[in-house]
Image (cartoon, rainbow, N blue to C red):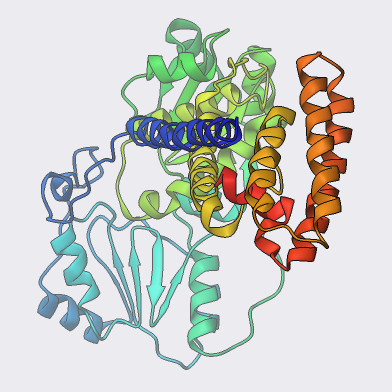
Length: 451
């Protein structure tokens, strides 16, 4: 009977301890097994280093040697290399330069890396223009508004960028005041008729000198799945001349139809949901690709393809015309996040249960039968030590234990048994105090027997 409490407690704790350890190992294995494979990264200049030019962004133009370009810049304040497309308001730029004597080297877009390096090595050029990207000194000017990008990519106009850079180089305050409005005009009847006829025949109008060859069907279907899109491709427009704005006029001829008009690398959208997404699409598109569009000579096919993909992304995100599709709940991400917590908790339980014999366990067994067995063992041990002062409490404790044993055998309520055991513990506590033996106090003795 004395061993029942000890064995029952140790078996239960052993199951808890080893069960916690086993669950911790399972959580650890599942967590690492579910991790996705990490992509390999390499900086060895392998295949990725040879991707330049595969998208048709390099032009046929080249540049002279560094020595020849240096000599040209020495001879004249503005040197425009063959194939250059950047233009500006001469009067505004001269006024900004003043008596600073800055020299400007303008190179074409679409140069390869070696050619770009040669341009950068021309040290006597105070300002360098590569395509429509303006840089000088420690500065590089980047547009940050749709109006800037429209001037840059529809006309090649970099007046604002040049003036901004020159004033920065001269430590002058930034010039206030808005740029003049873009010089839009209504298309003539003849111009509109020629475009409308092509759109009715093929859905595509490609003007002379435009570089578009065909409509990217997959991207167009993703951007506008419910209807065909009409595309007008025009070359970059000349500086200082009004530009025909076809979009509004074409929407009257083709109502409820998506219409995309390219002016060089600048894209205008008109049609359904225009107010909902056109500005968002243009802003996000040029903010991401301005750096490459300004320095390279991408065909309009590539520009249109990338733009339509951006519109498709916006449509799928629910920005316009179509709600975001519902996705089934995937519990795996949450489960993977919880697994480390489960692992730590299980390890903590294992350690806590393992340290209980060292740090101390509960003050008494949980079951009444285990308490009865432990107190019976205690009564036997203290009987041989008891004397005159402790005998009365010992006798009362043993009698109370006997009453508790009979209550258990007769199946009396457990609450009655616990009450008798509590009385017995108080008597044995008095015995331990009379003997001066704290190790025989019931709470200490029963705890040591469970351990």
